[in-house]
Length: 214
Image (tube, rainbow, N blue to C red; front, top):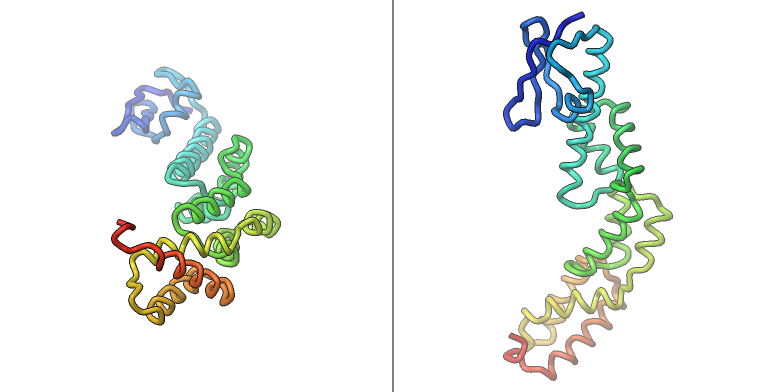
């Protein structure tokens, strides 16, 4: 049993230092201290202190997850592995994942759609490669099949090739084909798609002087 004698805000105001009977006892996330309504003069039993420690650990895990998700959407496996690397116990991580799913902040279907859309917009690549990337992120097979299966290799290859081709010399078809073919293979496209795409792009760009593309 101990009496709270001081509640002191730590650096950055995201921590609260708890003093019991005049001595520093432990830190709490500010959210936990507020939610629990801690006050100077309040008595805390050993079991209450242990319960506060568990709530604080859960809040720290939630805060860590929120920071990680703030940069871009993540798959559930990505977030789970991140939280484990941060040292949180499996029980705590599971509780956080459940809460985030309930809040709609963790959704592998939405993540997979974001990933495919982002690739299509900024770095087009093949259906096969997108599916492979989603598997590496731990996304379920049925989600991968649905989202990845909607990728149009012909269109994606064309968009990727058109962007790259503008920076290639068109004075030598052999060199143009070799460099563009290598570029498209790296993005996972198959032989036939690559051939059709290069022929299409070559014919289109030959009709337009490079000076007009700037």
